[in-house]
Amino acid sequence: MEPIIVKFQNHKVKSRLCKARTKLKNVRVSDLFPFSAAATRVAAERIYLNGNLTSYRQELLKQASQKRKEGLLVSAKSIDGKIFIKTSPEGRPLRVFEKTTLKIFKVVVS
Image (tube, rainbow, N blue to C red; front, side, top):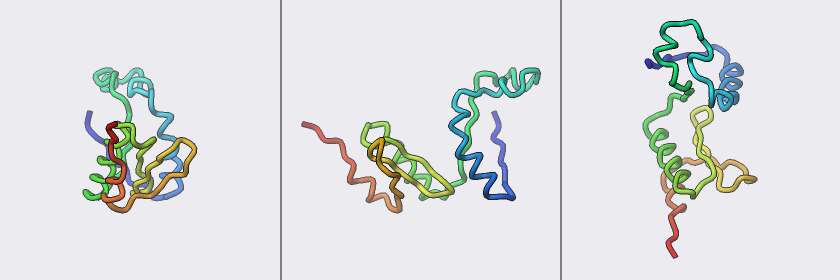
């Protein structure tokens, strides 16, 4: 499926949509457009909303996501082009500025 690029004129609308994107987790294209021929071709595809990040921040998010998959972080996400991580479920999100911040989360082998 081809990506669709959207530019918002109102930041509040963009923020609301980004906050609500978790509700799209199990929504498929065919759920939104059940009678569309194009929707039936991509019926199994999920809908994703991704921010437009710089290459540096894209790499930061990639490394943070890898740490999350390794079980070293609870979550990694971008909000308004900024990268945030959570180290505990009840903890506050921490903003990540540099790759060195992520290097402190290493796998401990005992």
